[in-house]
Image 1 (tube, rainbow, N blue to C red):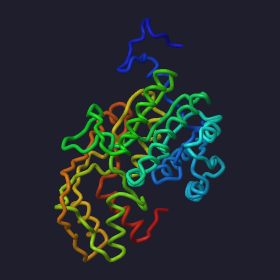
Image 2 (tube, helix red, strand yellow; image 1 turned 30 degrees about the vertical axis):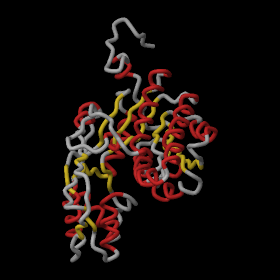
Image 3 (cartoon, rainbow, N blue to C red; image 1 turned 120 degrees about the vertical axis):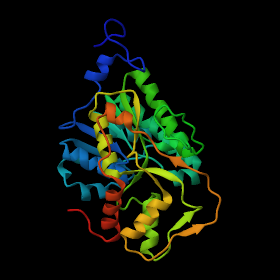
Image 4 (tube, rainbow, N blue to C red; image 1 turned 120 degrees about the horizontal axis):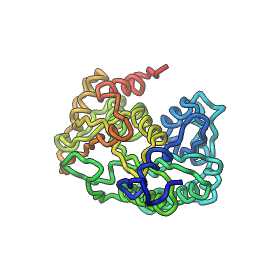
Length: 335
């Protein structure tokens, strides 16, 4: 065991650097992982990557929502579906029993959170505390938490991890709370952790986001709508890249850190809409709506993830949109 003093130099958050390099990471093959929200869009890709790495995976989802994971994974012998609710501490404790590492991805999403802030707090704040507490009680050694770029709020500058957390939305506030809980559990109980601040994640059949919304309107013969002039810009990152970063964070020897997960490619709403119209060979034109919208530039630097996690996005936006259109619009699913 490393002691707090002596020859071990202490890292940014007071942890011995020796611990950061030798004890923090969890090997994947043969280990047991819990993925909360593993039936969700990003979660399904994380589960698949873990199974491909030889891990055993328990997916915690609301009853009936985990079936899609089994149908898509191809590794059902190493996959366990656990029907449970994050808001129930007993469910969380049973889900964490016998687990080596936790990927906490279960969440009430952005739009539902805005519609029902109290429910957002119940799931994203209380539920997050419940799963962290259960992980501690079960002796889990490492947690990877899916945070979001929403923690930064609306900004006009490229954000690195030192950017102030200035969200003015209940969803972003709930993610800030989750990160704060992680730091507390790390400091008080010695749990190793990493928080990942996902940028604008997209991919086939996401069910949310700009790319999905534009494709659905094109498919229904409706002109895609653009609020204002479409100059708002975002950092779009493909879902398989996000899953890769998430799994890498578990295996990494880095702890007590938050990372942006993005492509670094800045594209406007107009750029993406026009690209999708072109890829779908549509004759529709954008419907520019004369409404006042704030100037938003939500683009993150992922240099820290590149440096410490040895991760960088591999799918550029052009290729990513091509994949989405091929599968979601034309129905050509990958083999």
